[in-house]
Length: 414
Ligand SMILES: [Zn+2]
Image (cartoon, helix red, strand yellow):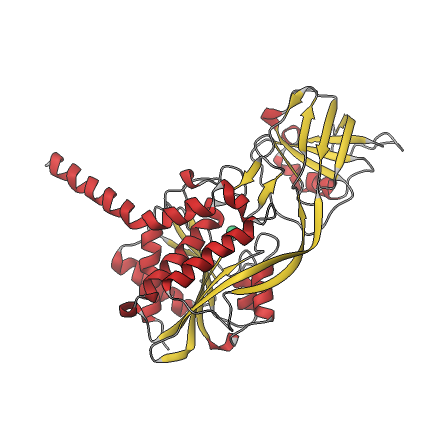
């Protein structure tokens, strides 16, 4: 018995991994160093857009209004050059030991440090001029975190801030440059009582960064004017200097891979549904939901023709199930998801939330388009950091989410 069970289990593992192989390949490509974190370093996002377009074309998806690309521009602060931080005599590793604030300016030099000892500490005139103020979060209890945040937001007059983070470093993208540098350093990487910091950080603000959403369409067999829309953002954070790569395997090479898989499936003649399908890979999500905002402001197809939109972000895990943003706003559709999930024994649990401006479904919801945002939960804790790599996501529920989507599409009325 044990032996048979083992063989069956092995077969299950092999067949499941074979099933996800293509998705895993897409993720490996999109999260590879050559794509530079699909952000603002050597046109990493453009490379990813070309890759997605190529797949759409190969599958036989049609362009929308004559193009697979919907171009737009936005401001973004980038870090293509120097990224050096030396604490005392210790050279810190970018991405691993420290991150700079996304709106960090260029800064070069050696600076004295002053430590914040008390929440209400008063600094006399000029005590901090040309110095960095060090805020060690582990010195202050959690109950003071709101006060600490407000000091970080509007600090006393100083050259910049060093924030010692006890837990993890979480990076993002900004479209502006601040006057002061803020550098977040992991507490474990900080040599105790360091009195001096040496910096060589270069930023480059690009006021009109050219990017593009990628679109592909499959016309319905009978009901061409009614659309189901699948969306996923393909951009991530890019690089912080030459060496720190934010690969974004889970966020959101995984969701991009899922819409590619769905596109491939539905493009086959036997799978084409009655309704039309539109696939959108958005750019600029991490910079503030910019690609989806642009799309909803200049939609190439009427938004009122969208029967339902499914936005997929963070599809790499699922050990704890999946969350449905807007689940509380569309109870009938959420009930359908739950029924499919229970009937077919797919994900361990599907949770629901109300509205949230946390991914690309948001602007559509605001314009009255019925939309869900799915994200998987559990598994790796890597998020907006250098550990979000293809090797740490297991695609645990990747197949199940796809099955859920396919049945949902089938059963969603005209
Ligand atoms: Zn994301």
